Image 1 (cartoon, one colour):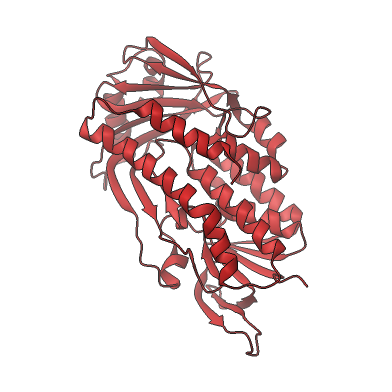
Image 2 (cartoon, helix red, strand yellow):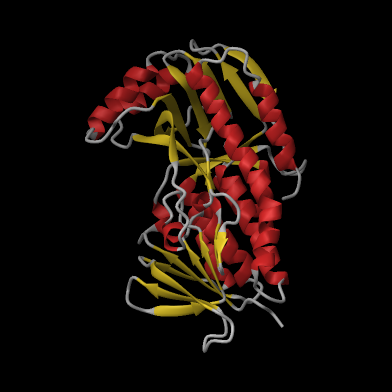
Length: 381
């Protein structure tokens, strides 16, 4: 007898929607509660590594992702004046039949996953979230499970609840896990803009006025560009002030940045956020409620593995839930055995790369760190 018939997923990001697809297509009744009303309209660019593409192929959406995004297999290193210093073949962490990396517009990825989740039979409920979660022990009138009270006053009973509601997860707080994200000391300025013909992959500059200056194509005509500096307070800045600050920072870079700079100056959509990190110690569950994705582990994008690790969480948890005869702590322990150390390595390595830059470490083995993580995530989760 199948142990899991009804699952609530809180959060319609990449991790939550991936889990919904995997469970719903196997006949599990899945509700996805998403507090935002337009979940597919938010975000800018995203870099999706090969091991994430491997999961997206398992979800049946790879062809759509390939068509919507921009694939590439190398990484460029440039000097601040735009001179190409090195072109490095990127590791195909998803296997030889998938690109090393796809850049794409995050709302387009979300829209693809939303459609796939609904087609699989999941019920996605925008503008809704859980206000409380009450665990019922086996032998009660509910025969085990979690009672969720929703923000619209309705309620539901579920065999398992999954918190996929991001780095500031309300689910995490509801189940009594007091871990909170911490700033790493860096902030990133981003703009989503047009793609010059010469931009065919991610190019990075280490040097100049910022720790990192980079860009990534996200489609035939689009890309996102970013500048990483020491974290600063940005509360209260107007859109024009944001654009002005990013424009001034960009003056330390030439080449493609000369074209990007004109777009920054004319933009009213410059985004600024701090880099943060989070690692919830094992286990990531309390009873039948479990965390995945950024709700459990989050890292600065120095290795571009955030989305990939969340997608891997969804794949592994779905496999275990679908094979389970009973839902007990041994199931969640098995989940931790396959996910915790891998996620910890990615988080700690991402933070270390940021720390090396903040501290000005000149002999840091950045290529060695990146090779180690690439080898790890090339293995199946």
